[in-house]
Image (cartoon, rainbow, N blue to C red; front, side, top):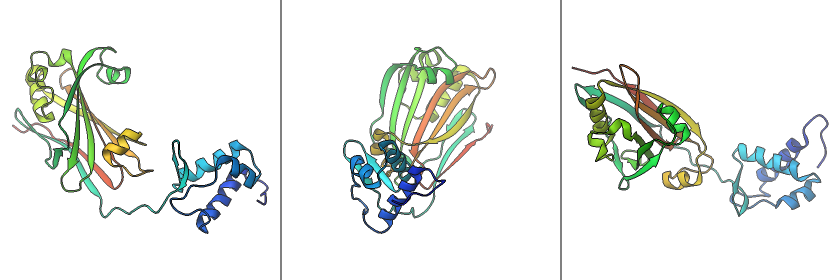
Length: 251
């Protein structure tokens, strides 16, 4: 490899590796040489090779598979169309409605848990407080995409309500139960993106290199803004357009 003055060495190695992929020396789906072989091939150190591999991985050219090695990624299929996912709550008196179009891919599961620090902070309560954790796996009927849903219900907020005995009810019924116990409710919601963990990739059928969208909704009282429930929806970010609308109560 001919050195280029003024350019970081790992970038020069990355450039040569790109050439090897472009000319077919390393074909899609094929494992590239080991780290030892690459250091000998380019006459550089291990850290330099690792930086070059990291750059090509970030560019979507390489796929590092734990315990197997590093492989050249094949062409990724283009999505046919943008998938519109609505996170909408409609209120009609004491009735709550969310858009249809999702159905359970599996039976929901319910666990008794203690709130971890991040969840306790969002719910404005103490770490270790008792709560129900409801987990669901949804499938979107029109597109077939999958989404993982969780709801955290602090015990102190659901005592004496339907949720104390049936925490697995759909969120619209949960909203009604919370409003009946605590008065008028409202929502705040935030969306972020990150790379999925292996379990999420498998459950949600997320392609390699594609991030997930994470939407977190807090149901809270209107009067004193007290958090009552934390919902999290996780789905592939590939070709997904997420819209959020919380409409006022219609009497």
